[in-house]
Length: 331
Image 1: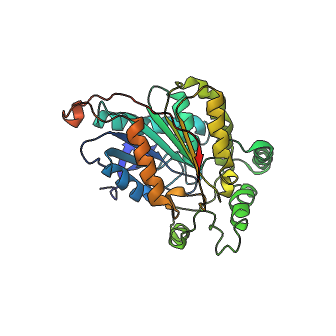
Image 2: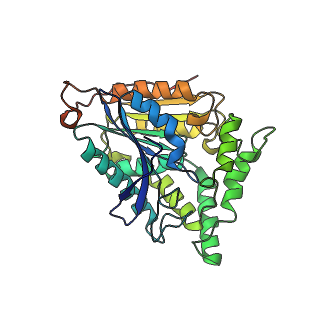
Image 3: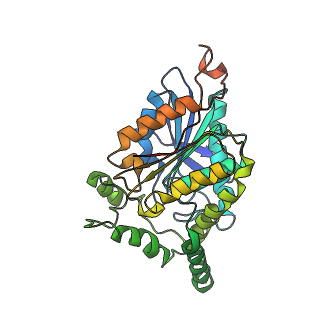
């Protein structure tokens, strides 16, 4: 089922490619999956299938400028000619609305990995009534002075050569630097996972590893700095699930995940679960801990989004929100 590529015309003008894995009964909720930079939704099949076994209708879609999604203003490597942040967020809402229409009454869990986490949290603060729980994995919302310096570099590149060409410097400062940071690295992408098969499949995938445009990088930094300043739009008891990897150079060894958890708590959020997985790089879902990480996430999701109250058909099933406080832990 997940292997089939479906299509949704977004109000933004994008033709969104998505995959759907139906929940095993009883259905507990809807899971919307937001993928990372220079990859696509098809890489989330195993995760979607496992979550479907736990009762979640899983929807994973390709963002603008990624995968098989098409839009007149969004070739591969670009969200849009202008207004990319707004448009990519509205596409998330379009997928969410389609899923809710197909499964009315079920709560919605928004999951994002890396760039997808940046997009997910921004979508949640823009549409706070649309999501019942949010999960952000392997995303860096706290790049500090280096992030501001990167923005300055990008603005200089934009002035010199325009915004719709690949950045010459940012890939070297991010992907390149992260690859070199792995001791004895075999490939430039060993920073993604300890699993060689995963790394090799990523490298061989024609829909992965492309160069992001200057405009896309600028949009990513706007998403990065924007969401943490707007979290007061969210309800304080919103269940939030944060995951990092202790060997992930993109999140400073998971430290920026813990920063985000503390940022939420300092601002009065009461239901924040955070964990940094040991011996894990950037793609927690594709590293050696993936089975345990997915199992723990499914257990959290079933607690955060309560099961159906009655055994009525799924299309008419009401949901009751329930959350459980959890402490930050580190193995």
